[in-house]
Length: 512
Image (cartoon, rainbow, N blue to C red):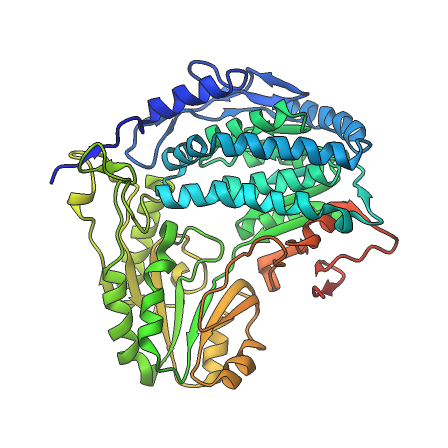
């Protein structure tokens, strides 16, 4: 059956609705930057394409370093005024912002589909988690702020593209609720229009938000090293995170640096394969482009045949396709596990890494193929990659020790508990891990030796929402932990000495 694009779901439809919803933030052909309380038609606009089908979409208006410094200085002025706004007024303005985001929820989600390729269900969940999560903070902010004050300068946010709403917008609004002006850099690879619309709705309610675009190298000095910045909040890769960590450590600046790690699922003396197999398709949500994805399975060799019998049928059931393609105009949007990767370059990078690993000795256990029936006729599919599973990636392959950030699973076989733990700790720290063992005591004993902030027992762990704390061990995290009251504490000053739970150069303090 030939598919069609869902009526009223084209990029041009989403763009037109964004212009109508926030004409101050968009021009006919471009997105504006927001700084000094004004929408600015500055920056050099770069071309951009949607990962969904390779068609043109709005590109980022990239500022230069000098303009970014002006934006930071203006944000400090806003911060000095906002920190004295009474909490009831801050709460009212954040609540009004959440109401506006709720009103435009479907448009925000549609923009996410086109800009970063999320299927409709996951795009809606990203928006909903942001709104619901901040409402939880609005309702319970008083005890979290007891005895604490805003920082001396605004919070600077540099986040990856995969969760623009539930991570970046969520953090920005909580930081503002706590009394800080906030700065956010739009991710280089996507989410520009969605974030711009969200920023426009917040700015209308008086939230002191700055939103700028630009390359990390060009803006780093202003957004990370400026004396005006009170805290740097970063979500991204280890290389960039390490450079930021060095910069902030040199001046003792408050920081929250969430970095990647190789999250592993270990299986030892395990037999409930039906339960395990049922979880495999869910792990492919958004093509495993998540900081809490599980791309590595560490499997007891004597149980490997049972593992394959559960894993292979499950991975073969995973569906990927055009996230807005339907058979008839009135049909609901497709229920896909994932759509495209963030761009065609990432899809090619992973395909090349897979080919290289196989050339060096990895065994291909599964190599999926795109189903033409789940795409529009003749569309560009260069950003799509079907699931791939490799056994035994060689130590010379990046797939052996780093997170692929895509639908590529690797399997390592082990014969002893010591080998299991060594394989699960291959990346010197992770955000999450999981262990499946028939004996709960074995799970508990092994989990204590896994270098991950959260370890699931027979089930995956996630970043968490509301009062659930989040951080990382080893190289996967630097600075203050977040989640629950810790997110508020990380961006406020408390009584001296204010030793925050976190992973710092001079101390590591677990959450209570």
